[in-house]
Image (cartoon, rainbow, N blue to C red; front, side, top):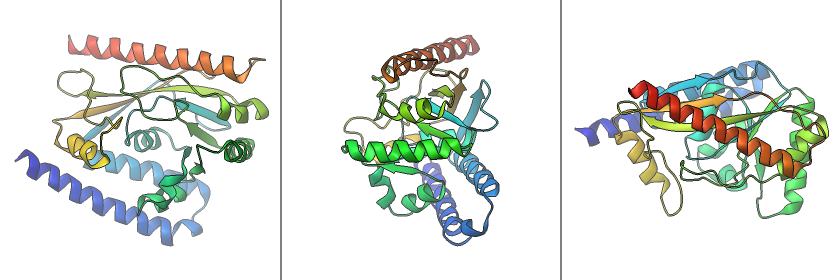
Length: 255
């Protein structure tokens, strides 16, 4: 029965993906930016609901840009969860652009694609990030550069912070976590790290009894004369504090 319910969730999710693909392909060009942003956020919330993932937002999402969000990275679900909490333009690896259906959806959502192995391409993306911030947009990055295990934070890369340094935009630290709805313990079901496959991670998520995605927004920070490297370290510490606070609150709710 668990596998049957998961298959039903998967089918409904695929239909939702196709509906989003149709909207992005045929209707997005005629929509004003505010309508596109609202659609992406609502679409993401609906997909989470179809897949049995509850969304819990802590702290205050930014009402408007310019602002850069920096978050820890755990799962393929992270972008969906953050879009559901607050629309933003992500910086993502260039490979995603070529994924069937997903690539079109990501491009339609305003994703900025980066060739991570190319320092020249990083400069190009920083330039486009700065342009987006100057236009009052909300941009988001995963400074770890890859997914972690959800237990420990990886070092933060500082290069993309240059866009906030150049424009004087604030940066908001964001902590992501997934917890079991029943036990309030960390859930590893959405994990996507190391040799794990995307299909295996999706199936674990769909067969899990219930998952809560927690998105915690911290207080905005400005560079205030800090170098990118020092600011990156301070932002990592801020994300870690948010993660620890989330763990303590989840443990308290369990009691």
